[in-house]
Image (cartoon, rainbow, N blue to C red; front, top):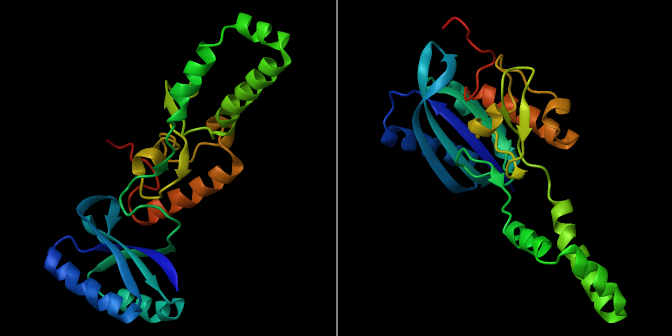
Amino acid sequence: MREYEIVYILDSALSREAVDAKLDTFHAALGGEVNTVDHWGVRPLAYPIRKAGTGYYVIVHVTADPVGLPEFERLLKLDEEMMRYLIVLNEGQPSSGASVLAERPQKPAAEDADSEPPPQEAEEEPASDAEGDGGSGEETEAEAPEEAQPSGPPVFSGARGRRRRHEGPPIVLLNYKDVTTLSRFLTEQGKILPKRTTKVTARFQRQLGVAVKRARHLALLPYIRDHEA
């Protein structure tokens, strides 16, 4: 049994009752247990799908056996009102369109700790061995969490070629449905910014590429920017 996240894009003309009836039919064929059903409702598409500009989004978290996936996908492909779908393993991302960001409750405390002991006190403490060892131990423990914290998502400002990077809250888990965060890593033409510009790790850059591809498949992000307007 594995936990999957399934994103459905249905015809926007369907009502919520009709969507729920379809989901019951699909999940009965898949089997397993449905954990979460999040109706996003009718949303505009980043690009037309079957000449439609809107679609009904539903995100479902389900625990099921992989054996039932082939029959489940066959039913999805036969449904004429199913515009597009995506089935991925649930890595812990929420059903809402938000990434998991790290909290920094210790940051103000660390700043206060750094501001309290002046340089003179640090020089006077080594005079006694007991106090000097205790003070140095406290300083290393306070500085260690700050160095271990990952760098956050970059926020860029300025014209192209003169962008300035500002630190943001660190991302623990990048959600491919988080269009706001993903857009910060894209250029005006819709291309992914290189790692030398964003200053992120190679692992995060790979996760970013996967997230952007999934968002484009679900028409949450466009493949190219339309400059005609």
